[in-house]
Image (tube, rainbow, N blue to C red):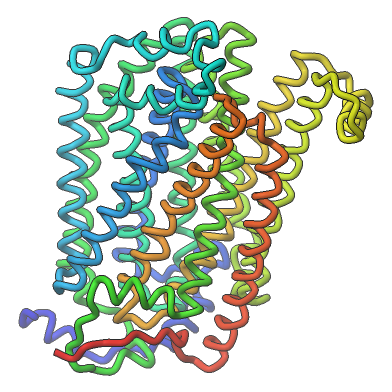
Length: 549
């Protein structure tokens, strides 16, 4: 540590209690940030804004490319193969680097350099020569034309084969997923957990999420503007994303500078003395494998991991059927799939960004401090279950209206359909609109409730294990939820010999109910233990077998 930092630390600083009291007395209930915290707060806020903006843009782009060039059912194959393998590789790499003593700072800076260079390289090289690098673009569609493969029981493989036909799009999808799981979920929030003590973190988290949702809204507005200006030209939409990737690469460079400045010129100079700082310990080394095994042997980390897994599965099962509704509606209306997909996703982004901001500015953001962790923790699993039930119920009714069998369930479905002014056009529009509403609700509750609760629990994990366990429950299990949901969809596609996951709606809904039940149980368990930890003023009882060096 340099002389300047030593002199600074020798000065008299207020205690954490004095600082927090001042924050309550001298700031508004909406923006509880003292002026002395501005450098740290705005550095992290802008860093989160850029990271979220990049992810929001990539998320829209990857779905547009896949649904436009392939099939919505190509996404489950991607998530259960390339995305899963990449997630495991990134998780192992992160665990290895942490076990070797590599600091979070070095990993964060390296990630921004690597992704920034990749985005620019993809735009300049891969986008330019994609058609020359890929096989004949109608190779797979010609194989499956006129239901040739359906009679052979191989219709479910269509989505899989498209991954190789358009492998550059598959690569783009994987890189977008890795940015979201590794840089946004793992590194950024891991950075916040390390730099912000619990009380400060609880004040900052809702505001950081507002930054993120402003980014989400801006990304959505951009996503609406581009297709509306190019309704008849899907090629212009693709070209827009090509050149926009260069900007995203440059934004990675901006984030690199902000984070480096934060760690070099702001973090070394604290503004108060943290209460109950971690006691000096002997240097320990937790092996990569033992760290992962510890997550399964500890009930708290297991419950946290299963909650993240549950959210991922419920969301992806619901969104998978929603993507088919987008494709179906576009084909019925004879519109470009890229245009309908981009507009649909952009509307969702804008609504989610605005409404999440409204929720975060409401008294709901203080539920953990005022009403306890469970008051906010239960919101996401309960509403996700209700929303997915309504959506899958709509699909089920529409499917029964079109069937000719005389079973009791079919008669029930036809009776419900008769109550509504049912028509093919209304049915397709209804599925699209309800899927949009449900997906938006699930995501709003993720940002406004689930993420806040998850990070609050993460801050109460002992600091020496915090980053590594976050790499497991947020990094590995975050993607595992998507991969397991995708594997479930693939199995159902093969059983029903179809390319439309909505054909298995009854089984999909039953699976969603079972997952949500486990998610609810884990939420209650975490809430009880979090409340005990807060009452005792201690960390959560996360025990790890360590080898002393």
